[in-house]
Structure formats: structure tokens, C-alpha cells
Image (cartoon, rainbow, N blue to C red; front, side, top):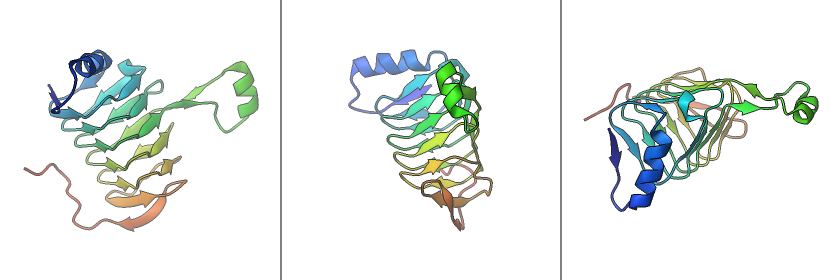
Length: 164
């Protein structure tokens, strides 16, 4: 069941219900505002996730959100693109490369962050606002930020499961 936050218009609720209709999601998911989901049959949302307003999930290559993941305002997850090799020819031929995005448990993605195809983010990480993630963030319980996202520091005492 999805928890609907106060002051949401009925029209918004209907829109989001339709968007989540083909998305696999588990209990405790909270949706604030209106996220946009494309290729939603390939999107899986774990328990107790939070998805904020203006989040964009482009699931063509598949998106998996682990338990307790928080996507802040304006986050974009994009699983498709022209690729780095021979991108000009791919653009002419409209040939897209698809790769999944996997965000493991208890990850917090800061506002207006973009995560590109093929990225896996380790458990307990925080990605700073405005970051662009182009490669795996493999070290658990770590702060990353920047364009492209880089290691900032290891996070001490980061919870490994939901509290309360």
C-alpha cells in the first residue's frame, strides 16, 4: 500500500496510481507530489522507499530501488542513452544502449541528482544534491558528491536498517 501525503489533489492521486499500476512496489512506499515513470513495468520499488516530487524514473533498462531508499526532489534515473562509443552514429541510427540502475538498501539521493545507465549504488550511501553519477558507487556507507560524483568520506554510524 502506498501512503498518500496530506494536501494532495485527487487528480494527482489518480495520476500516480496509474503510473504505479505496472510498477512492482512493496509496503510502506511514500510518494510526495508527482513523480514521472516511463517503462514502469521494468521498475521495482522496495519497502519503505520515499519518492519526492518531480522525480523522473526512465526504466527502459530496468530500475531496482532497495529497501528504505529516499529519492529527493528532482532526482532523475535514466537507464538508456546513445553510449560513449560511436555515439554520433548511434544518434543517427537512433540506437540506444540500455543498462539497469540498482540502488541498494538505505541509500539517500540528494535533490536534482542524475544517475545514468549501468550504475549500482552500494548500501547506505548518500549522494549529494546536484550530483551526476556516471559509474558505480561501490563502497557502502559513504558520501559521494559532484559532477561526476566522487568519494567524499566514509559515513560513521550510518543505519543499516530502518529505525522505529
